[in-house]
Length: 524
Image 1 (cartoon, rainbow, N blue to C red):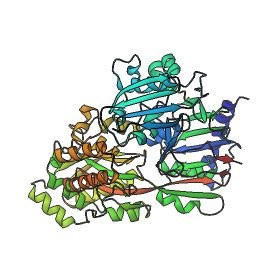
Image 2: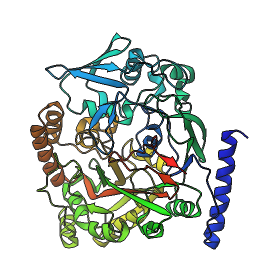
Image 3: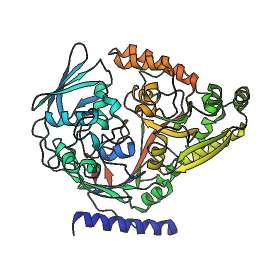
Image 4: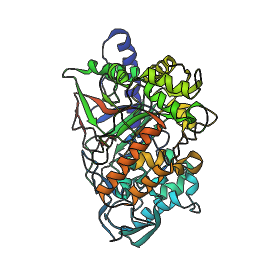
């Protein structure tokens, strides 16, 4: 029997055992040693790191690919990976990387400076022969790149159009992962279903809505992984994912529903928690409709009882958010900001002042997705709070990838508000990609609510150009004050991520990046 046949039989047995366990409470499944079965929250959109935006997809990709740099274990600090080192010019516009020798992609082709240049030119140059394998929604991360030059096989130089403080951190983010040029040339637009990287695990199989299977790379430059393989299973419904974990059909479950945490007490399971740069918010359509009026946006922030959501829906696994920047970025976070208090009377007064009593709102909610916590329950609670202050709210619920397809192109003409959550690597990332005027959807960004404030734009541009962290911090803190006042979002919660593993899994830790790094994991 082949390995892939074995994994299929394992998953069929696990699914059957889960069905029995749901009825009888008896766990009957037993996954094979050396094969880690991961319960994911959704089907991945693609396995091309330049073409996706969701942490759900990133959790797979970080095990298949490497970047020039990576985040040091347990931190968001950058350390060498495919590059062994780098130098930065005095003016902060040239980064020269020395590349690791003897590294090959999973398809056997050689990793070198030409491969690095191919990756960034593919994303950034419209005349590149493989630019049509996109779109590349997070190419914003590298918009400062003016040129990528091959100095020799092991040396590559990036020239930026201006100093750009988040550059190294962005290279460590999944959008900066290096793909095989040969595989892109072979598969074209289908590369996302046929990935090839240099990572600890090699792609084996993707069965839609069933599993993505990756196998150990015995030649991995950083040491072969202990696991034989990893099977990522998309299990959108949180209750089903919990039942699978309790039945023994999966070994690692991400994003445990708060109401299910108590089921994983005792020696059979290990609960993992890790604070990270997460913010859960509601995008408000500031271009058209009731939320075009700042008073109505502020009213929504007063109307939603965020502390009740944190306590009752999220079981205390988050904190109420104040503004757009997560407190995990301690150096850039404005501690003077206070969350909008729960004040229905104030909300009603603002709505009346704006003449928006009885306004009808369409609210996009997702069934589940990257960092979305308990989105249906949260959406329902928010709907009730808004209706209590006189707004009429209609919820439309969608599967995660369908939801993204509706929200990311912008809410105009479709909805007044939408759930969203981001986990980011730098205090620049979320506001630059989702609050700047230049990040409106028709300009290639994720500002789906069309918020615009020239002062915010100027602060963000200045912050990313500064190489002085204290100066950057002051600029970000000033930005947070303005955004909090303008209320383009309802600022809901900052989450502490979680996961649960079975007692057969060792050496697993959650990362503040919210990615899954599985090369050191052992399964008995």
